[in-house]
Length: 262
Ligand code: ADP
Image (cartoon, rainbow, N blue to C red; front, side, top):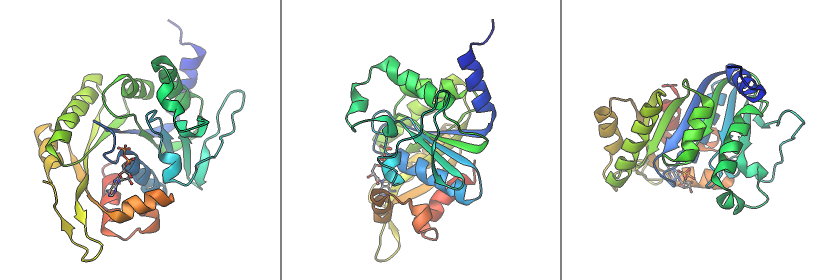
């Protein structure tokens, strides 16, 4: 049967994007938004044309991570203009549309699903090398809607922490992606050891290596370890991602190493 005008619009928008990467996690608080933002900035610093789409309805944090809080995208009759962060990085976040941070939690499921679709379809992304999507955590309706909207060629990156409890969540995320038939780029282990600001060494406070073992077990790539680094939290709070402000640090290089797999 014939495609609706919306479906055609979505197809056209997606057709201009070479690589779609959905950054997922089993649960919140593992650093998914931080990793997604640093990946997007690192790719843009490597000269790629990048879109960063934040559809994390539970707490859209990309505006804060990129000092874009309070920005209002221009909404035309047909398209929404993404906010330009640099010459080749454009950003759209549900956070730009919220009068207050609390509003996201009261939206009903179907409203959230519609918004996710609209944010892909109606945003004037133009020609992109990469669209990095900060996906809501878990394996519920919202990540489902995100992957279904982006289509079968959207690749997933799963972010985890090294602890055993997080590992079960990752198993669920990996099998969720596989059930949908989307390809996996692999697993990133964030908050893996502590990068000591004094001696520069990484100390393993919790067990590390859970992500790597799991990647092996699940037959996917291990994309690398990013330590707990006070500079990551500080740069995030100040709205300047680490790969931008301290490009040469070991932690920024660990983040940069992830994009080599994309
Ligand atoms: P999520 O998107 O999974 O909910 P966030 O990216 O918002 O998680 O990160 C949660 C908190 O952890 C933030 O305060 C962030 O600055 C901090 N954080 C994330 N990764 C690291 C890291 N590698 N080192 C230090 N702090 C981190």
